[in-house]
Image 1 (cartoon, helix red, strand yellow):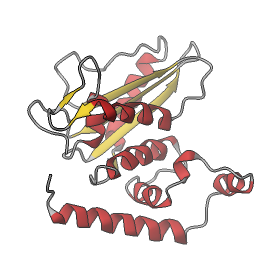
Image 2 (spheres, one colour; image 1 turned 60 degrees about the vertical axis):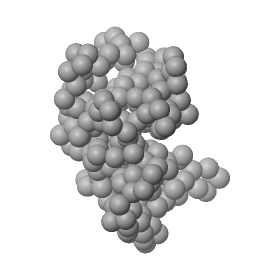
Image 3 (cartoon, helix red, strand yellow; image 1 turned 90 degrees about the horizontal axis):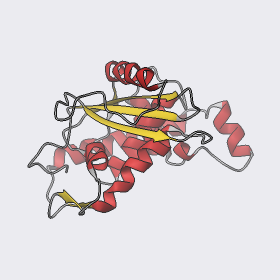
Image 4 (tube, one colour; image 1 turned 180 degrees about the horizontal axis):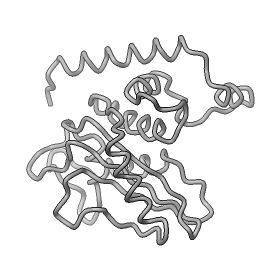
Length: 205
């Protein structure tokens, strides 16, 4: 499918800016320590995408959860040549409110009634005992990409792919997420997107 040239050029410019910024900044102490020990955080392995995400997450501390969420989203979008998302403090606030509601039960439940979504929303639950991080949630959602057929614009029979298509939805420009450790030791994560994706009859990219 042909895409307009301007958005692709803008994406490449953002990536170049991110690469320049990330190469010119000194790595945070935690990153440097990890490098000395011979391993890096998974989200540090693509410095270019990290740099772009950091630029689109003003006020986010280095390696903070918010930046982890944004980095992994933009890594998935880059694979489809979609423009990177920006971090939305307003949607982060909404996501934190909903995550707080789920602290007591960790139920895999959406914040909107079925069919009444004002925002896009992906949710994740990880059982007690696991060190579930933002990357685990985003990678779990992105893994649904193998079950999406662009030709049919549909998921494989009996499979889910709406979490993936929301991540790569071309018209979505911003995201805000939250992570909470539940009372039972499990982890609940939720991300909200604007404009929302998964519009019936439209393709994600």
